[in-house]
Image 1 (spheres, helix red, strand yellow):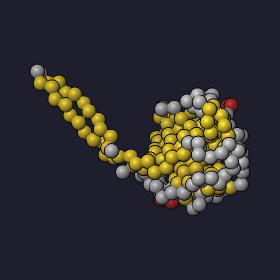
Image 2 (spheres, rainbow, N blue to C red):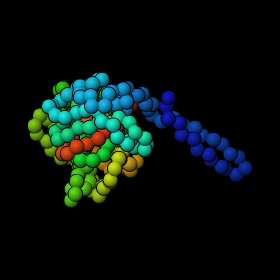
Image 3 (cartoon, rainbow, N blue to C red):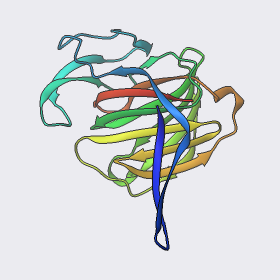
Image 4 (cartoon, rainbow, N blue to C red):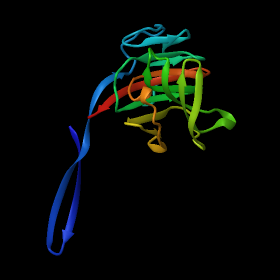
Length: 206
């Protein structure tokens, strides 16, 4: 359903309500809360594919809502991904610990794309990278984001625009004109240390 915005305009004694629709609607094309897998189960599982060797398994922990449940745990350089030809979409996930890798617009079997990560210690902040094979380049950085425990990641990609939110606050809004990365799947991984992930959602924009 399209998103609907309603405003009230008061002019003299008359009141009229104006309702207008946004330019797009959302359609959920993928979601996973890892509840359907067994504790200790190793990847690949479900629709997830392994990009490179590493540690990926289901762990029971206290979830973001305070209840005990299953999450994904990855370790150094471990990445799993969902292939896709999605162009414009929202990618949302909850994560904690380590330096998470939240990958999007992955192409070429997960060997090209973008990812964001959160630094540790003196490297606090959110950084956005583009990568191809074993090479990477930081293309944006927003300093000052620090968090302990779970935090929400939301990435919005529309055309050549990339917008990154953390805990509901916008930290990046940039353009990157790279025709090879105009569509693709999503992935989760660890840039450094053990990382937990939960509540993955992808919603395409129409």
